[in-house]
Length: 582
Image: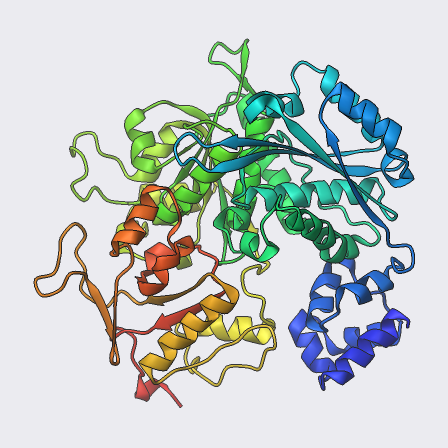
């Protein structure tokens, strides 16, 4: 069946109007009508969301792109050695592996000296000729596959070679990027040896089929071989959510290129204290952009003009994180990508160290302190952002004024800070697309109006197949619903407004933990349970600790965190104003 006929049939089978589909995809009803009458082609960047909305299965997606009937997927193993290549070339008669573009993984195994667990080391690659490419790896002295073999127990390494009847150069590059992205978030891998990022954003025919159908099919074969974890487990990991290997949207790619040009120009011209601000609402992709910018510059440093105006050096970059849970995530990413212990730091450590860097990236800069609050001597104290600017040649900050959670973060009454963040000398780049909320435009507006306390915002939630909003009057039912979603979908947690007593570093008089009370239920505040504290010491983010389902997250702990489902307890500070409600 033609695509335009199929999308109309599936919409009607679900009982939806063209208006509903249009709202879900943030387009007009006329556009949907033109798609269904084949007057307009569906933009490639909307295909994945459209197929997901209409519940296309893998076979239907493959059929749309003419993958059915010639859909051959082949996988073979090769010992990474000269002898292994010779054996593969002699025995393997599959033309899809020998003569066409392939995807390959070099995998070694190594026992962790501290935990005793066997972890995997991996390099992801693609090649037009796997035999020639493998021989090139083997003959190169400074090669990632050779490094894996040297680092692996017993110096053994396997290559998994994958071929497909529909592979081409664009497809293998896309899949290479996706596997780096997912393997970074997979707990089975301790280290990824890739030292570059494809940074793909260019579209090509059938891209949706490769991403939504071919990739999962390859991943599942690897899962059956116990090489990778389930896709669901990886997608629930903080490392995957913040991976620098994500394919950026056109808006993010444009922003990254603009930032790179500003940094390069400032460093080579000897400009000092340049500030670039990335601004956008929660879920607009700021952290993913920052993560990729960080890794790309670390892999490919900029030339920097020294103070003498003659000589140059390669740029040094550091990423700072104020948010404790996000810091743990970035530290894990840096460790898994072998970026060194000083690539990621918290703000106090960086400031106290006092070493100037060429490029300083500051995530969640709206959480930085604007006052002293007794931390250091008043004689040497400076606001966080001022101190950071003085310790950097160029500084990129992620800043969202709507996510300020404390009076300690406010800058409005400090002219120096306000000018640094909003002044004419600061380059501001805005991100407007929404990536965290998969709801339609009506749902996004409803949430935004409620969160910003707009007048008459608390109305009946819009109907949305992809975003479930419910209100609970019974605390037990509310708690049970979140626990059930956590069992079904993973990474579902309870959070609350900061309305219950808590004092860091002390214990309440009449209870073992600081508690949140709602209805007949009581739960500890986050980071109270010993099992959670123990996991935190191992750098596990709060939302990924299984026992944290038994705690209530605070606004600070979960800020910037991706959750599949979240139960929100509104405390006494949030109340219904009858006079302003109609």
